[in-house]
Amino acid sequence: MDPLTYRILHLAGVMVLFLGIGIALLPESANRKQGALFHGIGLAVILVAGFGLLAKMKLGFPSWVIAKLVIWLLIGALPVLVKRKILPPAAGWGVALALGIGAAYLGVMKSF
Image 1 (cartoon, rainbow, N blue to C red):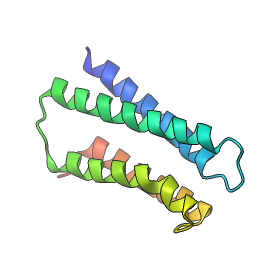
Image 2 (cartoon, rainbow, N blue to C red):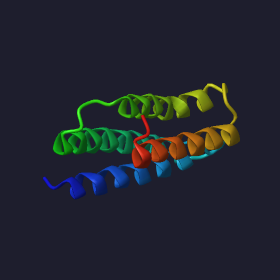
Image 3 (cartoon, one colour):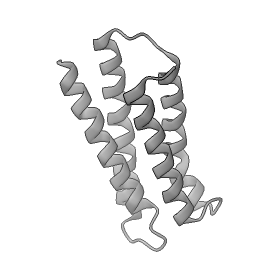
């Protein structure tokens, strides 16, 4: 597959992930399960397309990829932290936004 296709899939996964986070972190949402479903699908698409892109571009496994994997794990755990009331929903959205910006920065800049 073309690297551009992997990049588009990766970004589509990001959109689905944040759609799921937006739904799953609503305090009294009847659609919380749908949000969790979108969240999980987005995480899976991001992971598969990201590794496909890495393999296609023959980048190896640089340290910025490890940092993005840590961000991926933290975003994956975010709905659980909000559901167990470790984080309030507003803080969860803020953390999601900060982690998303950090992942975007690492993906664009490939700084280390």
